[in-house]
Image 1 (cartoon, helix red, strand yellow):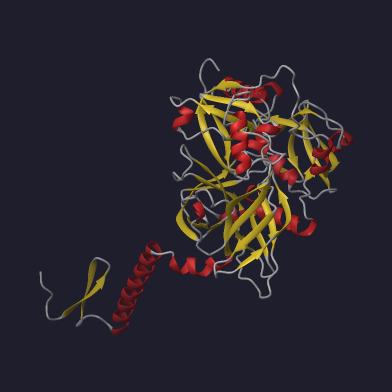
Image 2: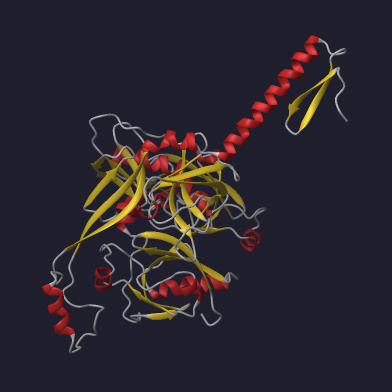
Amino acid sequence: MHPTPNTKEFPLTSQAIAIDRDRATPLRLFWLTSLSIFLILAQSLVAQARESFADLADQISPAVVNITTSTTVAGRTGPQGIVPEGSPFEDFFREFQDRNGQGDRPRRSSALGSGFVISEDGFIVTNNHVIEGADEILIEFFEGFELPAEIVGTDPNTDIALLKVESETPLKYVTFGDSDTARVGDWVMAMGNPLGQGFSVSAGIVSARNRALSGTYDDYIQTDAAINRGNSGGPLFNMGGEVIGVNTAILSPNGGSIGIGFSMASNVVVRVVDQLQEFGETRRGWLGVRIQDVTEDVADALGLEEAKGALVSDVPEGPAMEAGMEAGDVIVSFDGREVEDTRGLVRQVGNTEVGKAVRVVVNRNGETQTLLVTLGRREEAEGAVPASQPVEDDDEPMSMDLMGLTLSPLSDEIREQLELPDSARGLAVMDVDETSEAFEKGLRAGDVITEAGQAQVASLSDLQERIEEASEAGRKSILLLVRRSGDPRFVALTIAENE
């Protein structure tokens, strides 16, 4: 139908508004015209937001940096890994190495990562694994200049490191946002140095929140924004240009991005960075108990109404013992906040000031009691009794085949071959069955497994225990944290029935 001479069409998205000029009042005409213009502009802005992240990238790029580290690696004293020891070719290969200047001369090894500037006077945040063991750290800025950096402090527990550069002019920087306000489905943008490409941008959404993958203090944001090797330490931005995460690891069967990346939440990072700036180290609260989650059957056995809280399994010498806490107590409240589970309690305690006297409510034999506990410092407690102290076992085999992998505990010789620091702990992958699931998911000789089932592994027996625990819990697979050239990724492997 064609419009009559007394009507006029106003485009409004895919429809039109027809206004009868004879009946329309000037006020009505004004409001309808204004509404049409408003909706057209709104539609245009939404379309622009979906089509381009260019303005945001321009705004934040100057604060994102590429990081190059250089490490001196001790030279090898012989042709390890080339020919078997005692082979008639051993002398030949040793002479060949010497002629080419390899021999036992120290060598330089370099690595790439990402980071971001958080203050105009030169503080930079990155991952601890990016700079761990580095002799020299060089920061490349978006504008093209470079500056050397010094390490202010590191926190291996959250894989965060704080660096400092000296600049004659104020540096452009970004600020942290509130990661707790990020919602699943929100747009996010990652920036960094993937595979050495430098200042690369990728976009996606928040896929999940509050992921706990490998450590006590973990609070990861999961995203499908592309994150690859070299992105480690780079920022994850919200659409306001605020950093809500530090890109740390990926879950991948082949070592490349498949849309499952993890960024340490900014609300965890901010607390760590503040302490590193102030003290050069972290200072977390320490309660001094061993705890486990309250399951349904435990709650029933203890006569609890809900399966909530943290069950105290042991009280070694420390703050909790001094306050009168006992094994069998169920911690239901800490410093005025309800305790949901062990993970929540550990984070609450760790985020509390060292030396603070806090009220801890426990359920003991069906009755609640309030204890006043003066918190110690976790780092000092772990220094006295390391949480992951490797245990020497004369009966421990030198290698073992599990899940298609030939594994061996890290020895000084293996650390040297893989160019790992002396502090490295874990299991080295010596060989991979090419017909196995492990090979299909990208594991290769030279990889190092540092955690299994979200617990550190330093020996073959540690890994066997984690596998048994997962099997007894009814799980069909186990999550491994695998490091290759320092970069971490998670790989889930199926647990065979005979394992």
